[in-house]
Image (cartoon, rainbow, N blue to C red; front, top):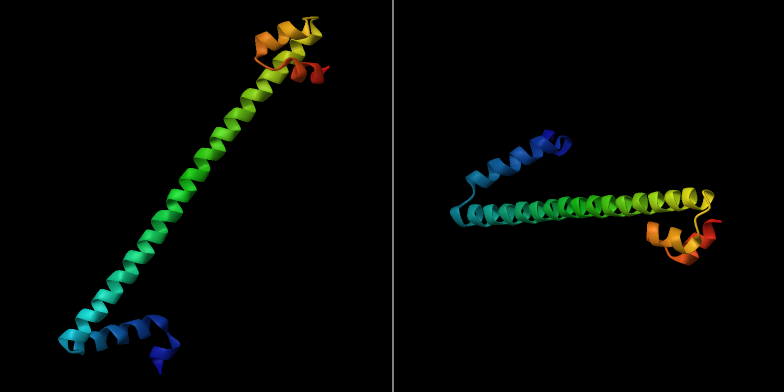
Amino acid sequence: MAATLDPVIGAAVTKAKLFSADETVRILEEQREKARNDYLSSLNSARIDGLIEGRTEGRAEGLEAGARQKQVELAEALLARGFARKDVADLTQLSVEDVAGLE
């Protein structure tokens, strides 16, 4: 009764039955448990790898966006000082079309 109400007690009862089982049943159960634990471990490892990859890609995208924003800000400042579009494009490494779009 208590084993059905509390999962921890249920797990303990299952373990107790396992230890009292014959050798073959015990070995099979241990192999099942090891396979389950290995599977869960591999899932957790894949999840962590995915998180790391996502963060790395996110940082790279953020750095690219920040660098682009700096180029645009510099281009706007140069245009405001009267620099020619071609010169601004050369100095900021933006295309002439991108520079023209800032005006």
